[in-house]
Image (tube, rainbow, N blue to C red; front, side, top):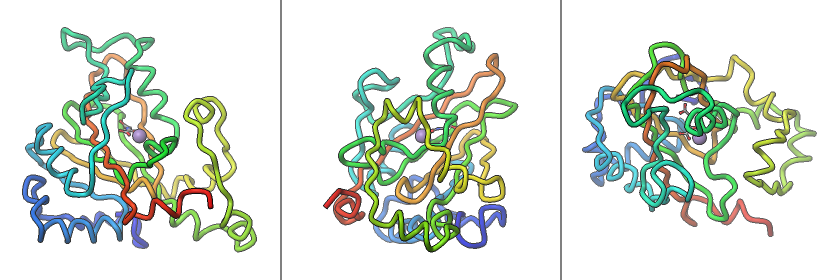
Length: 236
Ligand code: OGA
Ligand code: MN
């Protein structure tokens, strides 16, 4: 969807494909080719379960385990929601609500890890009626828009990404360029939507929604392999 035609053309490369069939060899090759070309894939009207999501994701590579301290810790399923035990929305000062706010900064997933993530697969289980969209931009296109002087300056630069540092001090320079409104794909969620993005080639962020409304998403994250170009990301 973030091809040169941009996301707004509504072109859906995965059209007609169900998630639970996409892990088969032949379907996977098509989906993988679409992923490499477009960076973001959307599957609509899916009967998604944790198992189906994991099986689909695993076709792309090994799944990450959710880190200690996050919802879903030690499993494949990162649970991003604001649900209290009784199913109502937690208070806006609750840890879950704060996690959502952190996700509202532009970022790529797991970029602070020694072995980065190739892709993330996010499915909507409960959607807010207002807001709560997820926005994605193409960093390949952002790169192409930079001046050649800037590209020359940045080409061999090594950036050390510290999770803690990034959360309280954001370099707005390049991010502001990459995320100008006209370059954003804003996804309005419906239950059953599954959105997948390439963490090598996009940035994304969540959007706020009224704190009394519930929202529940499940993310699986795929580790990058050497064949995905990990070596190029490491300092020489
Ligand atoms: C994520 C993420 C944003 C959102 O799942 O990695 O950043 O809109 N989500 O939930
Ligand atoms: Mn994220």
